Length: 302
Length: 171
Image (cartoon, rainbow over the protein chains, first blue to last red):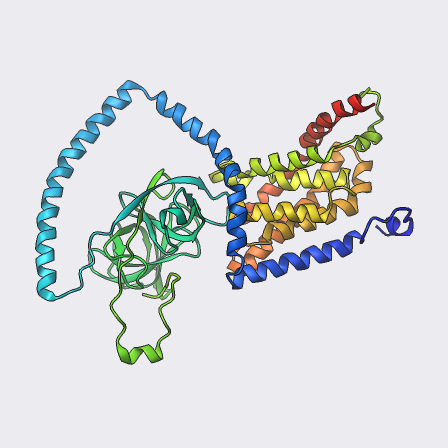
């Protein structure tokens, strides 16, 4: 490099080291601003519109493959699937009847108790546009964005349970952080006992961890975890995970509990976005001064 | 004529700006294919490879600035923080430019060993930024740098071959 500097027949501009220093500083500045503040969201949106056609383009081979796969399904498979679905339908119909009765009863009870009613969230169906390709993160992109009035903070689920939450909204896309993301936490409740806790993502698509549970906690293999609704982001009563493994070592204060997500976090193609976020009751007057205001981001403490 | 061209002159093959831009675009698209599971960990960073190729073969045309710009596009598409890819690719381009005379002296097999540390450094920069922000590093991420280095020779052959017909047309 000193070589090129000593023989300067042509002016090539600043030396590589100077350029590197400039661009490294610029990158670090951008990193800092992007990590700490929200000023760059509009620039990101503009660029994402520019890149949107390209991103749809790279999704084409995958969708073609899926279409070919669906087209070449064997008839015996279809018949078997049809039978299974018919059976499922009849059992579901019975359960639906029971559910309607229970809902009516529940509504009456809630009215009697004068509890604020928060059932029946409007839903929006969205398709997975593409999956995150960064190994560090667990994210999805859905094909509904600000144009379809999706908002950051909305909950995303499939037909069986919670998948994640919308964390960033582009005009035609929205970014979903999965509950299995390492930085993500969901306030939950054990369905059997009502025990409250928080379930954390582990970075693996098939694993969640229930941390900070005492060794003596009443929890068993196969227990279902549902959202507790505390924290306000997730509405209560939605299934999240099932306990798959418990290690109780008396040498440690906490038990090691692993769970598997109930929703097909890595398997689904169509997902539901819950449109109406639950309204929290007003905070009591005397606490407002002491406690901080509820932010729009997800809150980890139950 | 391409066969008669001496091996150490191959880096003198011409390349149009359009060809450079197209190769970078194709590399970006390859990176954006829906890689999953083990393939995601083993995915070579095509953008890094192509950018490094141009930095080594045309150091006065493709420099740190171009690498940085491509990094910004990668950041937007991957929803990583602004500047994370850009920082890694800037370091990569710097490595390529500093080493370009040295790398051109070797044959392809030896070039792989020269290029690997540069790629590893760029991967380490990306992982370091992630570690600073999130406090952990997925170690399988570095497998991608090995695969990338192994792909250096085929990629160089491919790009050289694509550049050669142009040389015939212009001569």
